[in-house]
Image (cartoon, rainbow, N blue to C red; front, side, top):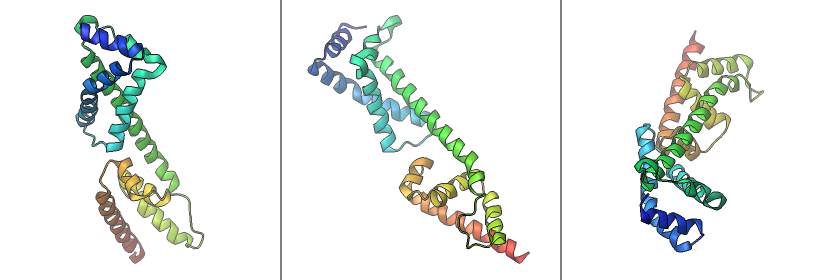
Length: 191
């Protein structure tokens, strides 16, 4: 650990505002770009909100409980404060990606169940079965899309954030999926 790092950490631990401000100025770009790079390395397009939230989480974890985590830095084996902060930011980002993937995967598991319930009693049972069969024939991604947009009635920006696509892509996919469902239903009726 360099003398500058030692002084900066000691000042932060004492609650010196100037030391914390200097710490934030010196390392905020590094943390921000580490988060974005970690998303990129995992082939994921982050939302600006997710990057900003993770950025804040990293800094909050450092100040939490009277700077406990920041005080833990020892600089052993030539580890610099910058490399230690990169590790913290990338681990926090990977944890976030795992959580999002788990939520995405569990949504897929629940779509099959969700499509089995009839929402509108006015729809005839045979027609409802045809619709459910058509939805069941969609890809897992398309079924999740249908679930988010129609069953959960989420607005397009929320669907875009969950699926990590643009809002424009939501409308494009909606049109494509509905066209595919119409085509499947037309074929079923003609049989």
